[in-house]
Length: 417
Ligand SMILES: *Cc1c(COP(=O)(O)O)cnc(C)c1O
Image (cartoon, rainbow, N blue to C red; front, side):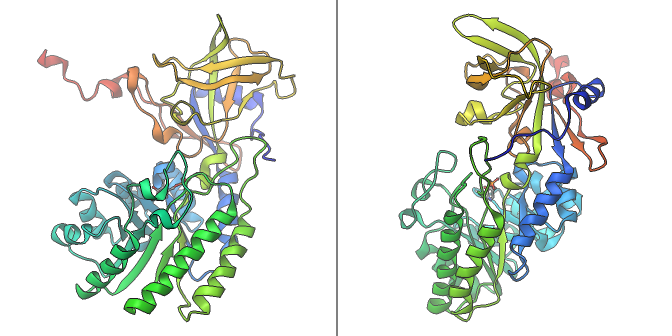
């Protein structure tokens, strides 16, 4: 069971809101740091284990800095994400560049920064060479296709996913880049998203260790790095269970020993590029009830909308909701909790049992610390909200201001009308 508790009381929230009006996302620094340490501890046995935090999950330099202080690198997939990592002080091979359908300028910056480049396709070898030159170290993203079951609504099944090289292409690509002077090699895969079953990741690690052995035995290349990707899920629903990181670490260790050590390939550096499980549970969208509406159903209308948190509208995803100060009230009433977009799927919850809600109540939407603010947009002229950091000493720091109406109009020139 995942406890859905808040790291602040209603009184604290009211004080915060006096200074920073709702809606906003707020992140719990202490909990993020503790979680980062748990992950590194679970893999402390692995040679030079590195977690490259998936920047797209929470692209805020203050969050990246906290994670960098804990020893994490950055997994970037675009020019902007590379710039964010660079400006946060994350350098060289602390950055893994896992992109797809990549523009030349992105490859150029990745090369300039000395990031570990992870190619998504065999044709990208020539493209990278032409636009930025080949680096000394190169990694490739493996897509096992029908060889591996799995996938879900977010990422699709491997054989329908646009990412990665086939097994045959991967072996060919490694041989080609060796010919072209690449000296150090990495393997990568990411075939699942928001998965709570640790066995899935242990199986994926086995698959990658087998692949490393095949690479060694068929073309004589010893890979230096195996990146197991991201995709570890979080218990969005209270009845779900978080992935036991220590168990995951032990399971992967066992297959590392069975495959990599026994096969004579030790040491191989292990890496992950999780985003969701690093920050997801430690972010909250705080919002105020503007309206109550009774028609064929009971509606609670918030000052937040789908542009503050797209997952419920886009995937039908569950996000737990706490009515601040009513934690102990009976869940008596059935509500649709909505935003103000002219889109009927702008609903944070449908038929959700909650305590009786009044206008002015503060609703806290849980698990918005990853793929929350980051997926925001400006449809319907909606402005993206602020991001706040709850510091370990209880102080609040604004780490991104809310957008203003001037920001929204900044790309238009009314004088040309
Ligand atoms: C999105 C993504 C991640 C992070 O996924 P999470 O589900 O947030 O862990 C990691 N690697 C790649 C290549 C991705 O596209």
